Length: 80
Image (tube, rainbow, N blue to C red; front, side, top):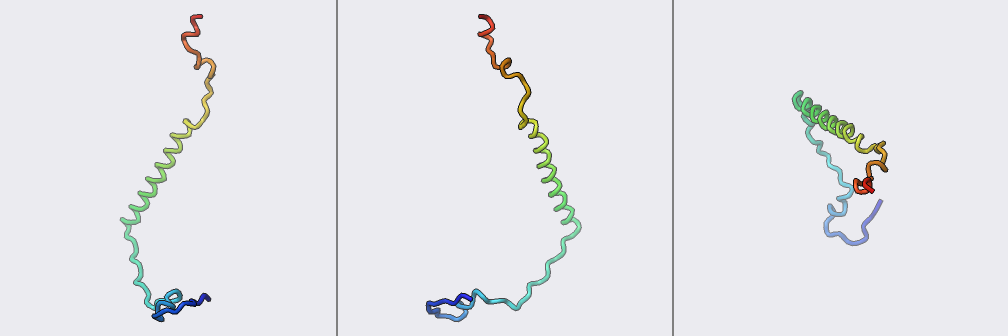
């Protein structure tokens, strides 16, 4: 593996990259039913909002099928 070439004053600094702790962390607490329900509701709300934004935004992304020449004529040109 990689060895340092410069002198290090303390041995623990040189071996810090490969140090492994032998202390295991405490086990995680299990989420309660209300926490799980809250997470599910937040997930559903976010998903519903994204789907709704997509559904409402799709018509504005579609090209219109109107006759562009008819709608761009000015009223001043009609009187000539």
